[in-house]
Amino acid sequence: MLAIVIIVILLAFVFTYTNGFQDASSVAASFIASRSAMPKQGILFVAGMDFLGALLGGSAVAFTISGLLLMEPSTQLVEVVLAALIGATAWNLLTWKFGLPSSSTHAIIGGLIGAGLAAAGVESIAWGLQELLVPPHELTGFIKILVFLVVSVVLGFIGGYALHRAVKYLLRNAKRSVNGSLVNLNWVAAGAMAFANGANDSQKQLGIITLVLFASGISATLDVPFWARFGCALMLGLGTMSGGWRVMTTLGRKIFKIEPVHSFDSQLSSGAAIALSTAFGAPVSSTHIISLSIIGIGSAENPRKVRWSVGKEIVAAFLITIPVTMIISGIIYLMITFPAGG
Image 1 (cartoon, one colour):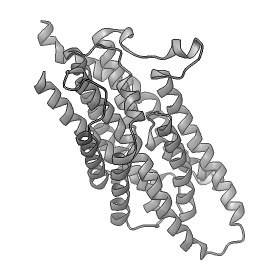
Image 2 (cartoon, helix red, strand yellow):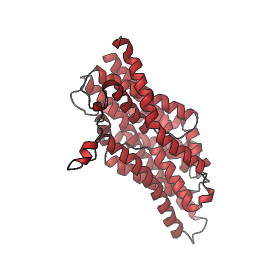
Image 3 (spheres, rainbow, N blue to C red):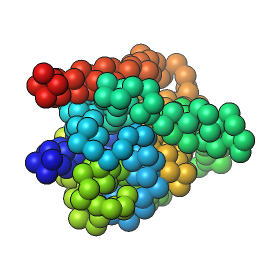
Image 4 (cartoon, rainbow, N blue to C red):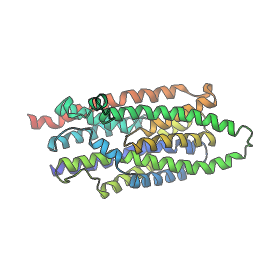
């Protein structure tokens, strides 16, 4: 059991690292593409704020993740988490290889559900449907996660569109020199966005580690240890620095040409959506929120200049990630446990 726990924790750190270049690097896309920062300094700044967000961002999202599986503490639960992590990490690496904005959040949620179903059936998942339908109509479990995954990206699109329309009106008579002020504001907005991103992204892995420690009996409660928080913060920051260039290119250049005002509007609208979701303890996809906010801003600027094909790819990734990682992780769980079963 202890060996499996150690493997799971190490894999959680690896997954956090892949999360860094898959999700967190998206935060720097518009910031750098708008020429508000040089690539190296922009990535380093965002990585540092991601680290601080992961370290100081609370535990509400972690508790949501750790409560998704309704299984008794056991070796089986540890094996479920192991299969989920392997499947989610494989998906992260595959989508990163092709430069497609995916979602580490969707991947780990799909992985946990798929492995849980393979191990103990539908009763092993906290779906949250009954809690929603029966008074006092609480939003919990998978339904809560799903609602916020959808609402957060809608807010990203609408918020980006509305904010850019408002800013365009306010700056309609401004001179070109206003870009200097917008560049300075972009540093503030990018820092706030990265902090919110780090807080939400890291807690998914913290929830996994906390669940494994509890399931194995190493911890008597579902509390997040500081060493796990520091380790996830470090790996998220390192992942951001090392591998986000392909995803950043897709978000920052292929959708439409980004100016400082576009970057500011994207950072502000996306950061607000992520921070709100984190406050409610909901894991969300930073990449998809940012992507849709950029598309929303592009629509407000000039819909004909938006490369909608990129948006369609992002939506497709949004729709397939959870089902695909469910299947992958379910198969991996059966492969892991087959020798023992035989």
